[in-house]
Length: 546
Image (cartoon, rainbow, N blue to C red; front, side, top):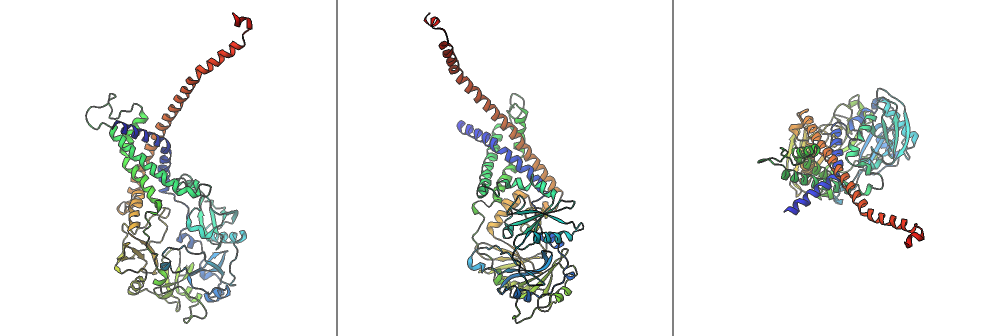
């Protein structure tokens, strides 16, 4: 038992020397991330920087533009917006193969960009073209400043998101605005896909960028990044657990105190503080380091192997737009006349066996129009429920209508890791009676599939979302209570880590000095002997014979 304790103390001591600096970095950067997130361009922000379509000349109808560009295949969706090169363009996203047959989830392909006035397809995004896109983006803001081209990158500190992969390489431009904003323009579509103001960039160096160990991304360590984070988190969990056990064993909760009169045996103030703070914040430290590991989905432990949703089948096949279609489409001007004056984007989609158009503006939900008549369209709940049965080869157990957020469907602040996505209310929750206990959330207004979750992902929600971000709805709804709790816990964890750093490095310095003294002592006799021999050889021969 005594040897086990000894090894426990040694393991905690030397793991602490190695990892306390990481702990301190994670706690402090986590505090920053509560208020400044990793750069992103949200759906609403993107729409805010597009021109209203009613003010833009559009010569070609969708079928004409696709025909001029030589596009005849099925589409996933078709968008119309002043989104690329400062001009009105159609963005045609090709339909993906049947996801259900392939049994895996596919990333969207990059859209083909077609000029809405000439029908010419975009073949290359040059620096001049990217400048035009950035200029149009900035012209929609109050300052309307001219951009300056900085160059082209494949990936940098603010563009590690995998969602940007279809847009690489990226053109980087800066706006001479008060926020000193950087814009990232897609190298495939010419759209502005990310913005990063100076304040956001600077805070990220002590926030998300360092918290997620992004200095290891985009270089020789990139292939090992996930493993490094995973093993550091595992070692950190072991450190926190061992420290808790040591702290409890060494603390005298009852009975006689130590000779110093304290409950802790450690003589130094720093050691005693580390011991005390460690006991107070042991549980939250363990849960945060462990849940940080869970955020990485280590070794795909939360991947259930469930088949992908068959969204194309749900909607009655892919989108088909051509002059040979049996049902002619309403004109663009007719659609804009039926939509709100502030419409920034038209989106043709297939929904529950109908071809519809979603008219998007920056301040409200989309207006849903019939693509053939340009009249307002309301999805029937029965039709949407019938379409949902085609998502999986499993019966629907029930369909719930959520009018309030709950523990599995909730919204977060835009800057947070899970924030910035569309989480409308009311929403439909379709519960399937399959082996994976699949839930699908659908927007009853647009018919869009908003997301899915299964038993594995719901486990991840508890082990990561709940334990790491404390996104417990009763707490989130009572801010600033959530802020106060998180700040106190982060500061406590930081104090534990920083005192551990000081104690660890003092111990390491002491060990290094002791080792240096031992080496000097070990070499002293030999050096003295060599000096004596040298003196002996330099003496006169006569003296040597005496």
